[in-house]
Length: 182
Image (tube, rainbow, N blue to C red; front, side, top):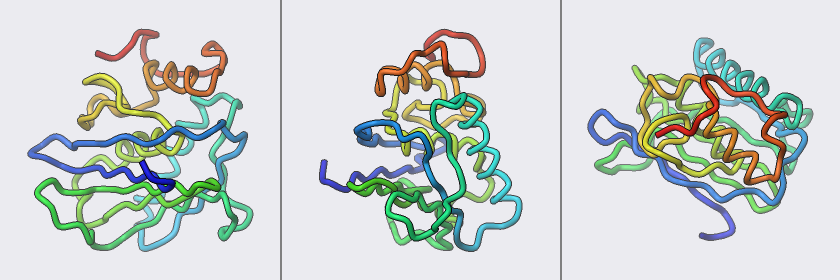
């Protein structure tokens, strides 16, 4: 993988196919974000809800927060792109580009997400921002998107995060039972 890791999310039939991201060196205490572009008010609320859900799950170990300086070096810009420049069989819904010094772009293609669960897409993508990989066939970080499985930060995602950053799992929160997704 290059210094800038790229992940693409696509739709094949009714299942969204998702790729992987490279983990960061360490989990920062604050992950600064800024929401830019022509998102609707409802879309902005859904993005904020996904950020809040991750903050609940992270339980103070780290947090997503609005950027003090939108042009800062380590800011994650969540940006709306009206039309996807990617022309492929699998519809690309979103792309994340992580920069080597920290921060990056999380691009949502508005022409591709209409009628889909933006909450779940954002929860999954924010998992990649944190360095999580695809895992299992069900749950938040599954390779195939399922709007019924990706409504909250689940145990499998938090267990992966704890292992990735050597965090005590008992300090984190998750929805559902404390069992791996299958």
